[in-house]
Length: 247
Image 1 (cartoon, rainbow, N blue to C red):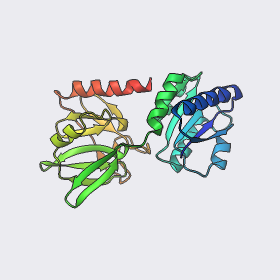
Image 2: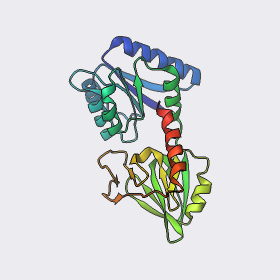
Image 3: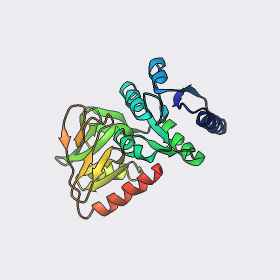
Image 4: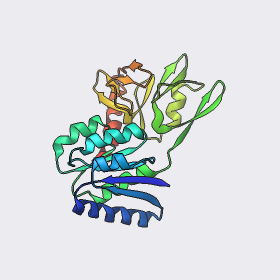
């Protein structure tokens, strides 16, 4: 069963969000465990279970929602963080934390329902043919795929490199209908969720733990991608199309 935690010190906001969540799960006809907390401190000192989604208010007592979010991610790296606030100046900090959604108060029902649909769905598993058999990797763990000696290498968010039996062209065909991935260069396919910054000259990726600026996974490796002039416009359009989900 999926698990959601909600943390907000404002009773009116909590009641409003509780009603939305009750409506969502009643409509979807699925069960989900939901825990409510009045402060970041209460959440951190009470929680000892896995968290699938954390919905955090920014302005709270001593420990704000951004600080609480870092602790949630430290304990549960796969959690989806959603921030609610009336203070837009926290947006940069939320992006540094790689927040999945940022909601103005009062939270828009349609946007919340759409975000929950994505966050709570079962992850798409991708088959990766290798010399020794087929490995299965969740799509959200693939940072990028790059060409290597007419075949390709899959780089994961833990820094693992998996030599595959497929070419980049093969991967492009496989991922054609997957809007999580885009190709900024004929030798690369990147996961749009890992993009930290990009321009026509270079693309910087960042792993989920947010510890590094360039593509530096847990093994400490840096990679910078230089987009193709011909591929860049299509890549940029696909990135902004994906980003519209966050609005």
